[in-house]
Amino acid sequence: MNHVSNRLKVLSESETLAMARRTRELKAQGVDVISLSLGEPDYDTPLFIKEAAKKAIDENFTHYPPVAGYIELREAISKKFKRDNGIEYAPDQIVVSTGAKQSIANVILSLINPGDEVLLPSPYWVSYIEIIKLAGGIPKIIYAGIEQDFKVKPEQLKSELTDKTRLMIFSSPCNPTGSVYSKEELEAIAALFRSYPEVIIVSDEIYEHIRFKGKHCSIASLAEMKERVVTVNGLSKSFAMTGWRLGYIGAPKWIAEACDKFQGQITSGTCTITQRAAIAALEADPEVIQPMVEGFHKRRNLMLGLLKEINELKVNEPEGAFYFFPDISAFLGRKWKGQPVNTSIELTMYLINEFHLATVGGEAFGCGNSIRLSYATSEETIIESVKRLKAGLESLEK
Image 1 (cartoon, one colour):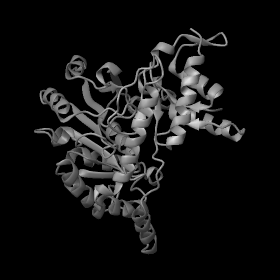
Image 2 (spheres, rainbow, N blue to C red):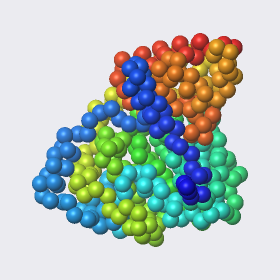
Image 3 (cartoon, rainbow, N blue to C red):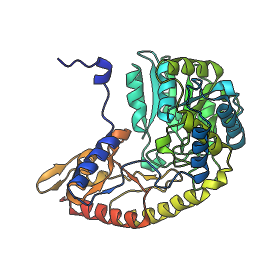
């Protein structure tokens, strides 16, 4: 007899991973599938980081590390926060985890009790809502559409605040939209939350260095906000280290201590070799990744021009990350061979099965009238993928 816990039953399968699985199935059958579904840089990890990892193996960094991470790494993260973000976090305010996803889970599971409310601007990253549900929290979804560049306004947040609100979580640059909150927009949000000291803000800044306009602003750097904010970051996107699995938080000391305690009973410290390599990455001049950022910028411009050529498709101009999140609402309700395509998930299945193009339905991100497209791929692939997308959308019957 198979028994799974009730907490597992409330979780949804990751749509991004489900689409990746369908892509592998079709490729195994010899089908020429183009995948725009995964959020992963297609660049290699810089050589100097690999060399640091090899050196760590040779120097026998192969034993259990401290739960919160090596002190040398936390010192490097502390310096990075001051250099890049204008935030002063001491090493004991930093916890290193096995990816930013674990960092976020640590925070939510350490701070949220059943029945607590979490403000969740939509579109949001797929795992936020699932981790909130796992903690027994109640997600209060606040929708921001393409007409406002997918960015929530303070008055929208204020309308959902109650005496049960404990957290607000958002990302900038945003996955899935690529939208970036300006300093002025963050100042407006900070002004609201200064009047609600019981609410902690979780700021996911994993795409910090992949932005194409202006300087990144961390909400924790604003006046009176450092003790109200958990800043989440990592190496997966900026240094093309997705498989290395290292994320971290900078937080008020009491939250860092709570996350350290929680992680100590789940995974303990993250991989020692990754930690030593991370020191090299964090101590490097951020300029070393500019060729990658410039490459993404060029691809963004290419895909933007191509998407604008598709009639009835609404698209904004993302300022960071490596995604588009076009509004496909004009195509929903149309038919393929007499069968209606009513949701974005049905549309993505139609696109992969009929046109061999893998994308991700917007329902996974709290926005059912869009699909996510990743341009972390070659220019040739971008051109062919948009060609398939255009053919697929235009083949639907009104």
